[in-house]
Image (cartoon, rainbow, N blue to C red; front, side, top):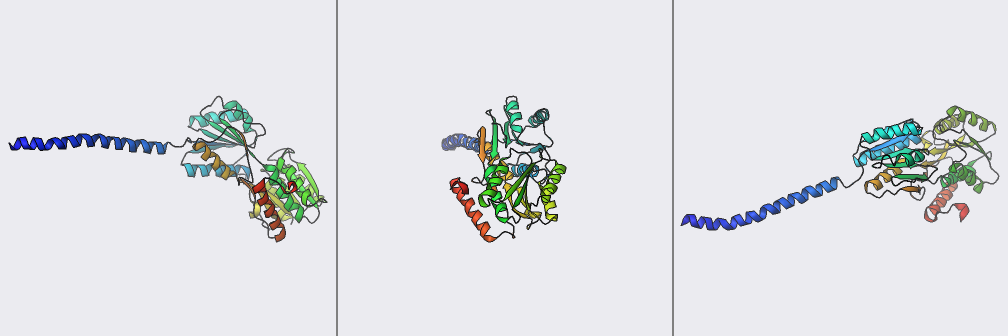
Length: 336
């Protein structure tokens, strides 16, 4: 009798166990599935950077490298870079190496990469290619070209120079005559100072420091007192030499006030690390669009750096006001 009662009492328990076990299995499955989903939320796997010059130039390449390191920190992914990538053949070889490492996002740090990527993209459909400041459009589904709005950047730098020059002679040493920031700078100077002369000379290379220094000497002989060195390979050396001569400069790409806060009136900054992090985030979330896109002052990726203590407060205040107006309306001071 006791045995029979025990069996009867155990039947409900067995029934509950049969119900509970599948529930536990389901909960464990959901837990593992959701954990796996969180871990695989992003598309980003490994990231590569191709630089036409070097990552130790203190300006352009260095900022790209910092952007790459920020991506490594934020997304906890492996990152790789290659320097001196200055032709299609070398680019193709580097992309092949990156693919073998599992890279699925590549930054081409320079204007020539867009044309290389338009060709290579069909050979590597699992990789998204991002070029910076390409002069041609990105034409494939897995290519994106980001263009800085350099004309407004130069315009505001020119406004600073035009209002602070003492000799009314201002120099520009550019890499190439097609640079939009050069035209913007000249227009900005003349907007605030119609009597100022802007002497423009070009190196026709991003990194020919010897020629850039010869042009600087020539401009100093013409009585320039402010120089805008618009080339990432030679801008630092020019600013350092201007400091020695007691003249002034507008910094380029990086905030170069660290070279001399009385020498560098301000800097036209391109915040490449911030931009690269934005691009990586968009890619990781599946929102990076193909084609050519632009960014600049309104997006916070271009801005003026520290103002020199040697600039009158009224000038700084006026330019800040014009900058804020541009951020709100997209209109430069001469377009009001």
